Length: 280
Image (cartoon, rainbow, N blue to C red; front, side):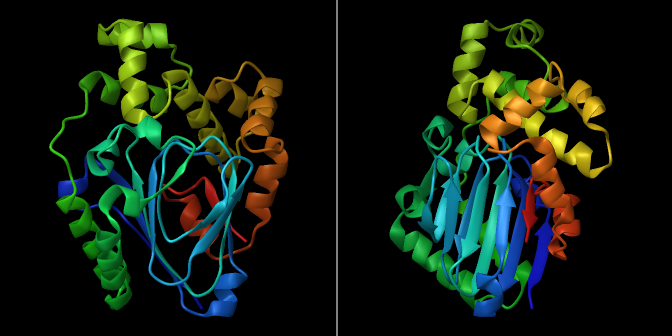
């Protein structure tokens, strides 16, 4: 009924791309009954559909799209297909997406930006056609990688921003003051550079990282009390407040839904870079 495959990027894109997901549901009725729900994510995404469009429903951003880029997302989003579904999703490293997009990433934060506005409508039509003609997931991924390589800028990621992202992914409790001291850079300069390249302030980025990490730990069976401590929440009340603010519901309700969703995709998603996403 459906085909799903998750790929690591080839070596030339290893510094820019985290994961690539190919999803193929050719049957229209099956695709229309398919729903993806996702927590906020600190990872920019690029989504290219080569069959029907998909509709996103969230508190801040909604609409139908075929070729779209997402910056750092601070809300939970539900996505549904309007017909036969064929899509390749690329998850970028937070500090490196600008090397493909060619824009300051704060332009994309919390937004859905049409890829035709980034690369041109003709380029996207040609890419869609090539994906539709591909015979396998591996061939589609090879074609999307070739597209990305053609559009890769030579700009280097600022080393302080790269290291700051890694530090916050490892320990989102790290303060901007401590980061700046460790990186031997002023707080103001670090925050400005970080916001331009990542699309959020270090504090906002760490807040989303905490939320996504809490879901990963809960999927592993960790208790909420231990999750709150491990992720740097002041206490469980602080964690619940952040979930309500960004996901719209308390953490137990969201994770219960994710864990109860008995779609065959969810095991694969839970072990991949898309673990903030589940299918129903």
